Amino acid sequence: MGRVEGKVALAVGAGGGIGGAGAEGLGREGAAVMCADVDGAAAEATAARIRAAGGKAAAMPLDIRDRAAVDAAVAATVATFGRLDILFESAGIAHRTHFLDLDADTWQRILAVNLTGMFHLGQAAARQMVKQGGGGTIINVTSQLAEVARPDRAAYVASKGGTRSLTQAMAVDLAAHNIRVNAIAPGPALTGLTRASYPDDAARRATEVLIPLGRIGMPEDLVGAVLFLASDDSLWCTGSTVTVDGGYNAI
Ligand SMILES: NC(=O)c1ccc[n+]([C@@H]2O[C@H](COP(=O)([O-])OP(=O)(O)OC[C@H]3O[C@@H](n4cnc5c(N)ncnc54)[C@H](O)[C@@H]3O)[C@@H](O)[C@H]2O)c1
Image (cartoon, rainbow, N blue to C red):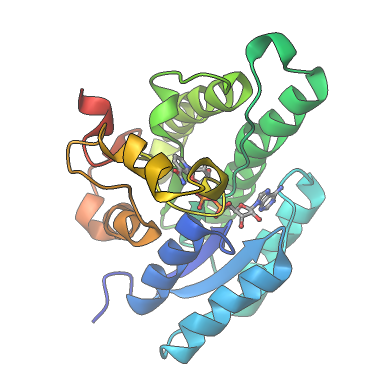
């Protein structure tokens, strides 16, 4: 019996590193997973891996900046698998720009995906969960940069601070419906988002010396937290953030 056996999940950003690994973990533990990503082919590749491992999955392209498309994705999940129990929101984009050079378009682009997209998804999913009754669980991927800043990332850091606060606000408003809303804050992990930051071993080592556990994260390192927050193991958790960062933010 899997940890989320019989549940239905919508995994967004499922074509990416953390989203893909989390979606596969949910599928492995018994959930039917709708994999969605602005990169539809990458979402389909994740769904295909879940099916190849014996799980249940479908895929669709989705741009979370588009509210109508987000509503349609929730409707498609319900049409395909009958209900929605778990939202796993791992879509995100980043930038590298000094604050003095940050243009308004970049600011808007980052906020539109990382923060407003999370609002669209959370509200659409929660409305469905309220309608069907019985509660649900929402897992938002934030970042250790919701807590602290690093150079050249003002829009990203602001968006991630917003996602942490949004997670808490959603948790407060949705608790009466038994919908739990929690966040995962990854530390530096090797994915498509960060690959350019680690062009060679030296660049990677420069970050790894700052991580008490001595290595950069891999997408699979986040799966345990996803399953904890998706399953009944976290029944008394809401509004919280699970930090998974090798100790990076502890020093
Ligand atoms: N990798 C890290 O070091 C790290 C650290 C902290 C937080 N995070 C967060 O983890 C989450 C996942 O990132 P990742 O590292 O797996 O990167 P990734 O680039 O591998 O995955 C992100 C996915 O989001 C998708 N996406 C982008 N814009 C979208 C949109 N408008 N609609 C739908 N999907 C969209 C991308 O196509 C991609 O598949 C992000 O929120 C990121 O900010 C990552």
